[in-house]
Image (cartoon, rainbow, N blue to C red; front, side):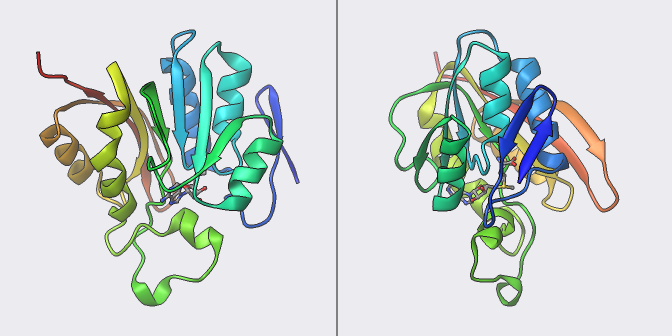
Length: 196
Ligand SMILES: C[S@@+](CC[C@H](N)C(=O)[O-])C[C@H]1O[C@@H](n2cnc3c(N)ncnc32)[C@H](O)[C@@H]1O
């Protein structure tokens, strides 16, 4: 299936997260934050829609990573450099910005299913399981003044995520938020404060 968004058209395939309001909100925030030739990593790139928008509209150098092989193949088909891997495990080097629209839905064990769409949505019992794992390593891959742009939901606990990030030495800013029927989505920017 083809998806048209702003000035791009991308392909999506079954077993890959279909771009939705969360994808579009994060894409908007990323476009407004990226400065020309920055190095950008998109974790959990899915179809590659956010990366494709960045590639088309900025001079930034972008690479995506996703654990889902179908997502990695789809992103590649959409002409984005991509790696298949678990969060940042396969990543070497540092980036000016790391973008992540994580799986954030609180999901009890008995609700989870054995398919790749579950991997795109299932954030564990409190919605924060993958986010915590991501934050443990993300700082190691940020260049000086590097920042994280992450989509978070009221279903997941926005304040909990912000206070964890503050405790990890990030300065936090809300970039954009929107209310939907069941949740509020916010894109937060975390800028790593490096010790002098
Ligand atoms: C909510 S979807 C977002 C997809 C896309 N970025 C978008 O906004 O449309 C979350 C994505 O994270 C990926 N993902 C989940 N766990 C991951 C992990 N441990 N490592 C890498 N990617 C992961 C999923 O496969 C999925 O593509």
